[in-house]
Length: 302
Image 1 (spheres, rainbow, N blue to C red):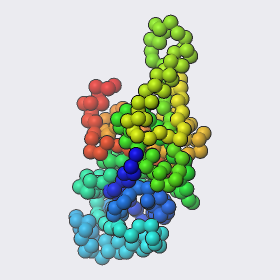
Image 2: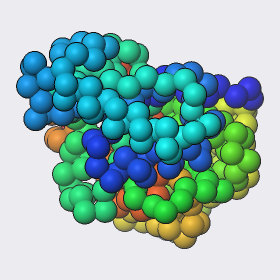
Image 3: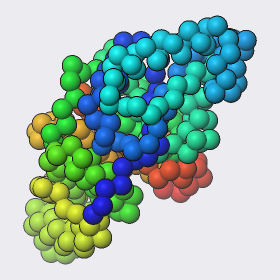
Image 4: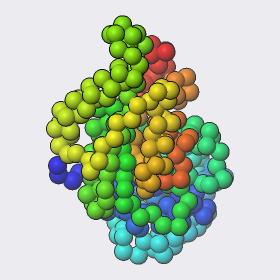
């Protein structure tokens, strides 16, 4: 399968120590993420209108120019050769609203954000929910980011194909191993088949393996290892988080159906619950760009 790197990347900076970790990750892994210009965006709600204009391409205002120089200095120190084509934007306003607007206007494919060690997981996940329907890569505070093993969770759906391709492409670029995990459950009413619980679980695993055969053919690639894990308690997020820990992953990729904030708060999602449990390695949540589920759709699924 040919390499199709993400081409439009936004890195959200806040002029805190977290920027050092984000830039370190970019320095080590940028070739696996993008082939085009990188957008570095800093939004400061403390700025007023005369300090940072509505247009992020306008560098007028002494405070805005000072922020731009700080970001530029950090980039030049951290990325002397890794990234040569980039642009820096400083804006006033609410960071989440501005970032969401920027991603939509610039048709961003991947937004890269930091995960501070002191952050409340619940708050961070809610912030992720509010982000636009574009893929998100969350980076934790680490000394280094060697990506040797990438894990990807798949349910064999069309959206998970996008997540699988992202994992495969990054593994190719980084010469890393990539492994997949599929969780399966025993449905209610299984006893009508005449089989006991564990016998029917085996049937579900066999069905998953059969489905996988055509799935990998459609994807055009197969992971180095594929694991099928029985989800006895119907908690796929727990299974995926445990998989990430047991496999000592350096990065986890998972697909997520785009949702509006209201729908996400109502339903939650496997990706959201995984984000609460997996915070010590880079986590990529792959979304179908600009495709959201509204509250009415969510109510239909409850």
